[in-house]
Length: 464
Image (cartoon, rainbow, N blue to C red; front, side, top):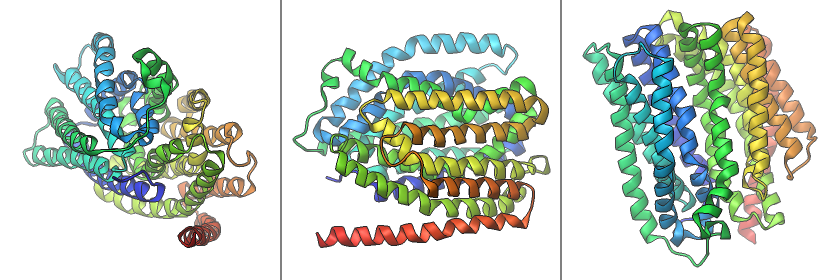
């Protein structure tokens, strides 16, 4: 049986995310070409609204399984089934509240669109326990396969609709729904096969002894998940309030390109949580793994800054219609936030996997407050660009506060500070079309050092 490993699992998750993002962007191309910009913006807002509400059904339980499952592999499947039952009970009031609230907020939308969007988000959330089971049992490659299945299937349906000149937004939403159903079925079958063959003598922590203690232990993660959607969706909500759905659609295109890069810190976070959780009571080993993770983030930084800009600046104008071409400038600003995010991964995962997960919840709340205030101030006067800078402010708060709160490493790290400053200058200069953005090449120097350090560490481990 495989066990979680940071480098290998990050590679699998990042690779699958890359494929999923590529197909996701292709799907958005079909959507933007088939639907009116206003309809596209409405579809985005509906999905984000239900995702924000229904994520509370998650209750933080899959995250708890991901943290603790590696310590008791043979109990992971029964734990996943138990989570599914609890989530089914929790879901009932949220479904009622969501549909009633949605009807009041959007009384004139096409009939059935709201129900389809709600079903999409519910089924995606139902997939999380089985995906967490696969990851904590060392099968991140299979979890990545589930992600790719959903995205490839959905995009294939979109392509068929595009060729058929379908312009009804409800049919496009139904195609997305079919993709999520197929992904859920795949995750269930894989989880049953891997979970039944898992073995090990470990036991789950005492929090799993009863449903009450389990829910209380997961409460910090549940609140965190309730806050988390606002980190990436708050700016779109503010644009819908202070501007219009056309700006929402434009910002969403830029953010989709940004999400193609954010897959790296997300994959690393997903892989790092069980790696940290496995040694949460061993401070020396935890610090060792923290340092390794920090070196990985330094290596990834220059790759994202340059390849991200080059790929988006070249492909986005080809893929999307001229009305979306301004998304390149927005993306370059968001790229600063990406850099802050990748540098902060070891710090905030350390909070999430530590003995007091409430600190991670506090971190997320601070991020949302900072991003919300910045967006509230900037968007009315600067529109989409204000939304992008508001997002960057939230990412900056994440890097600063995570380092202050983390018990790993130094809160004041000159190298991280310098890399963050270079990232700000690079993103701002790229957004303004200045060749001085080449200053970002300086990030390659510490990246080369980190590569050499990791090679030396791997050689030392083999000799031991």
